[in-house]
Length: 119
Ligand SMILES: [Mg+2]
Image (cartoon, rainbow, N blue to C red; front, side, top):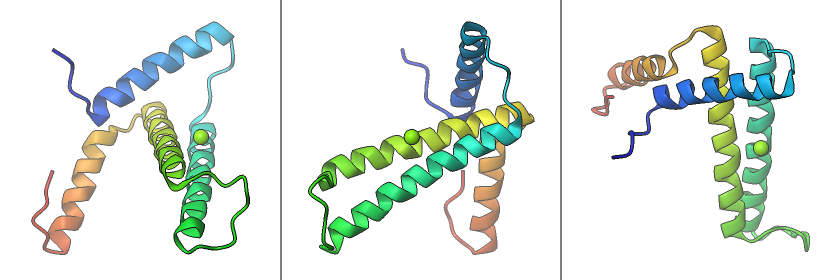
């Protein structure tokens, strides 16, 4: 039976893979500022794809090289996954339990604005 996907498991496996990655390459460990920078870089890539999707949706003059909407959505998913993976690494290096803090924050906003959705 497959182990369920959770944010906590992603954070743990990302950290383990990063340790192996750095051991293989002998690259120095990154600081939390470098992980934050990498995450923001991926967020910028995601925003650029979102810009292209909007251009397709509004029939703006498109370049011949602009991918179709399905390819753009696939690319957006890939860039969002990059953001999430770097976010887990940032949190791991900073000693932050991302799953716990996500749950606390999500529930706090639901409670504040009287929404029933709770984690
Ligand atoms: Mg990327």
